[in-house]
Amino acid sequence: MILYPAIDLMDGCCVRLRQGRFDEPTRYSAYPAEALRQFEGEGAEWAHIVDLDGARAGSPRQHEMIIDLLDATELKLQIAGGIRAAAQVEYLLGEGVDRVVIGSLAVTEPDRVREILDRFGPDRIALALDVMILEEVPMVATSGWTEASDRTLWDVASRFPDARHLLVTDIGRNGTMAGPNVPLIEELATRFPAAAVQASGGVSSLRDIEQLAAAGAAG
Image (cartoon, rainbow, N blue to C red; front, side, top):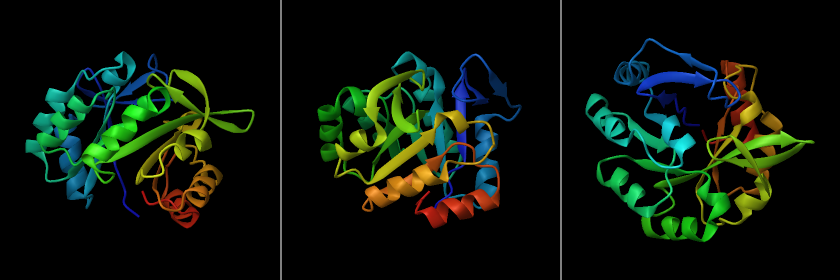
């Protein structure tokens, strides 16, 4: 299993959103570059960075700052938030980002996402499937976690048989440190055994990570 320490960026600052609420950010004193160096010093190989402003706006807002962070770390970077076009993916990969995350577009324009996967390769693209659990059914959310779609996690994931990386966040657990949704990850890994599933939301202990690894999570 690969651990992806994550940095959520709002106005250039490291923040944490509880259950995806943009109006309740917890702000941290560490600058992004400092956080990356700390992750690296503790043995991380990857970091996951989210442009929250871009996720909310539907287009990148902090990519230039994120690119500057490449000079501050040897970590491989996986970048998310507001990415909607192949040109944006090309820019990030061309500047040295290792993997780009596509979220809402997987729901709204699956054909375009399949073209992006074909063009850049499944190792360079991760699909972020953020879910709201509604009546025990995982429904994929869009627009930076703010809107529930009419598509289930299983429906959306099945549209991309060539996708190699699926990043799944249970929004209700995100930022709560109340433990991950292990059954959800286990079912996803079982249904889509060829995918490397990244589990996100609620992780707060080594025990959580052990349970996710046993459930089939790759990250």
